[in-house]
Image (tube, rainbow, N blue to C red):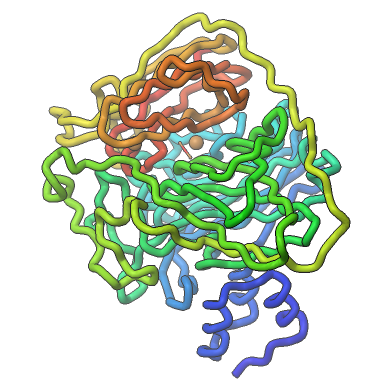
Length: 512
Ligand code: C2O
Ligand code: CU
Ligand code: CU
């Protein structure tokens, strides 16, 4: 039996490690204090910039991870689930010495950051082969909004599989928003939502066992790599949650028992003022920053994931066609619910628990957060239709305007051969995105964020900058985007990453 030292005891109490962790601790004598610390909700490794430079080594590799009491072999950056959190400020230089020790090629994408899509920055056309190294280097622009961004692999054809293995981490930009006194006074927590499926030997279930057309969902849902961790909220105080949906396909519909969320940012970008919501719908790729007021009876409150129906391929002739065989029932920790059941349509699940601990003098909510100005009228309106169907070249595929994305990781160089969309640098365009399919598709654009103008012709009332917007089945969403600062080629795609890998992506050339 290993001895807990005083600090670890304090940590177990204060950081509220999940009960499963304590269970492990008692059951196994081989867990090092290191792995214990790494499983903590609060002590996840962080790399912060200093003197204007964020520099680190980042290695992608398979690592053994304690996943809710079971040994799992996941895909990690630096052996961590989730990956180390990176923090920088506007104007900082970022240098990431990246090594690929996976068995497949990969690369890095900086989701939501306004940086060049070329060279050693947010270049998703790079292919870093197994055993190779690559130095990413870029500057965070002075005009980069502070917020919650993230990084993950982006080699077309392998994105879903690698993300589902666990490769995802937060990239936080600190700035003005963090200096707002009410926000500064709040207790900050990060929640990275990931789902996994592993077999009896702890190996990741392969793509063959997943319903790719539906978009793979795992039966083990984790927050910061833990099942149902706890977060403390001082009575009277404010809890600032920065929530990232880093799942491949799963949507989260979140609610906190008896509490409202006061949303302060969408996709990392600050809103004009906090808006009170009872529920948050987060599609893959999206982030929400919220404040929670500790104004209820001291106690424990569950952060619940509510059912959400994102559509299904059922109309297309059942599962045979999709090649998904589903999970064997009852095997997973949450009790595998079978392929169709994993579409989040079943019972609410507790993802985390918020405990009132200690108390502080009552803290007010902030009033003014940002001032979002409307974009000028567009020079062009473009239309995009999202659907799936047969493509002569690839068979069943996900399509944008009837075409699947061309090229994938097997081709050299990857994916740059066909241009779906060409725009001019420094212009504003409207994109009207229509979903004529039977499943919801979260539409994401790299490099520049956008504003939603209308949904099904109804003007959008909430001014916000986003990088991913949900286009529900049957819906038309009009967005306005300003292609500013950076020329070069990048992509837009559905952020159900199986759909992206199966073709729902397009190349976007921003011409100088
Ligand atoms: Cu988070 Cu192109 O993706
Ligand atoms: Cu992205
Ligand atoms: Cu999709």
